[in-house]
Length: 591
Image (cartoon, rainbow, N blue to C red):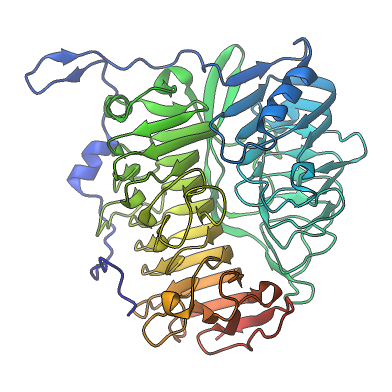
């Protein structure tokens, strides 16, 4: 009953890079592409302008506040709208700014260091549009800025898919909406908050490789790795799970200005990281000139995008919505595919949106993949089936790569993300089968599986996966690790029979296959809210083999308002949730 539609075959990991992969890794950029008849095809140009939806400001720009307010007015309630925006600020000091950030809006500094671009003001997310409820403040980001908040504390009241990266707050940070209404969890990385962070009503949160002046409280699951100033490990009371370092991390690539020239900075991989990557001023990494990128703009097709990659260009997706009729294929090592302003890719005819070869160092970042109305077998594939090359020195990474099935309209996908390549880093993803909006329903936006990991030595830092019809996460690879997992089971299951898994009541949110010998997880929560049939019983949130090498720390399941119940936390361990109240059931360590 646990076999996936196409069960991965057993495979033995090798540490040799094959000749074909090596050849791909050594490809040089070429000015033209060859057609099948030997004729030279016109090369895809690199560089160019950033298009109409990247708004660039400097301190002398007239009426910055008015322009920022204009975009926020459009985006404040546009949860499933089509507009995408990036607000980019050149190095300098900006006075009296309150940049309110709505849906599909990225705000970022254009310096190499966050301290290069300073706001004497705030970057604000609140929830007035939703009556003080922040649980739907998705799809936005703040990056690479220094803030001197007017009141001393900046408000960033968000939920999923709203990263706060490379930020320096010279004050405190409030993660709750005005009035302290509900908020559903978020992510901070590579940031320095001089004052205290107050999550207040935030149900769960993950902070990685940062520095904080203090942390006030927590509701269910507050997880930290590599955070200077983090509270001591104390789960479940208070619900803090704290790792001194992050085993492997590499910060997200970002656009910046080197004088008058745009470049993309690609930070180096860090091992056993702690604190921000930019503490000493200039971060370690590589700068790539914009001329080495195909600057993708709305209307571009997959054939042109693939041609650009084949001739040696990286990809910079400007803010927009991109419909594709063939898979975007990245088979060249070290290729960067960076999206600005929540750039969105929609496969129209059931194709896989993005496939990455079994090559090292590919960076996918800042992209939203939105399933189309024709079912896709997969939406993102990292490595082909039975991939086996060693990428430990230079892993492929997915950062702020989000997936959505339904909500903006009908969408279907059997499995959202499949990771076959070894050593892959999944750093902050929200993989979401919609539970509201348009085009959703138990069969309308059918999506059985969220994330499936077949590769060995894969690390997930900040794994948010929700509402899939069957398993949200399945793990087949060896030595996998997850630091922070947030999940909700599908709200809209019509009855117990619809989720029955053979003799098991429901599909686990996070399942490690019986074949796995080594696996470890920290700070992991699954929540149910079966509002269509509140009598549904979920046997457990987590399922894993009982073996010495399989370990979990700080697990929690919650029945939201008693709408459905869990019998156990993991396997048959942990007490049931029961009754009409939201009372967690917890397991500190398994086994």
